[in-house]
Amino acid sequence: MVQLAAAGQGFLLGLSLIVAIGAQNAFVLRQGLLRQHVLAVCLVCALSDALLIAAGVAGFGALVEDHPALPRLMTWLGAAFLAAYGLGRLRAAARPHALHPAERPAASRLAAILACLAFTWLNPHVYLDTVVLLGAIASGLGGGWFPFALGAMSASFAFFFALGYGARLLAPLFERPAAWRWLDLGVGLTMWTLALWLLLGRHGAG
Image (cartoon, rainbow, N blue to C red; front, side, top):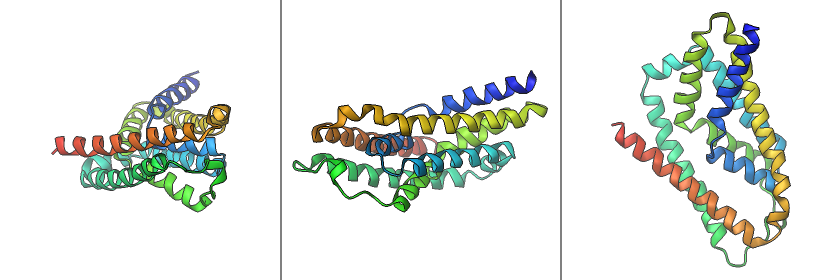
């Protein structure tokens, strides 16, 4: 019973950490709407989360706290990547005669995977929230740390696959190029907002 409760706690906490709209989720949603490399994208995101959760449970969070330069480096790299990706989406939204995404050449699977890795591993809050927070909670559970970690990992797999494959339910709304322009505009502004938030947060933290 204790093991089951720990697993449930891990699932709910893990879900609460990833369900908020962010750069990674926006990318997965867009790939799901395009139906391009959805399996690869969902797997990379979920497996990356699993590795980060495992690292947190293994005590990597203490290492992050002892080496503040790591989150600082991730902040600058992450902000630069978000700004560049956001610019690409804003430029796509501004093209008056852009083709419907289904008519454009699909990005390679490697490009999609590399983007997933960047969205995940260049996000400094992944290390501070997922690794440190989950690691700290798991350390106080005694023998319940293993089901707690499995629960948190399960939440990542459930969420990303539901988002990636569930996005196709919105496909009728995106039959017109205008809808994709609005999506690209929203994604681009989201990326720029997150990049600015990262930089302002880092500046404020000294």
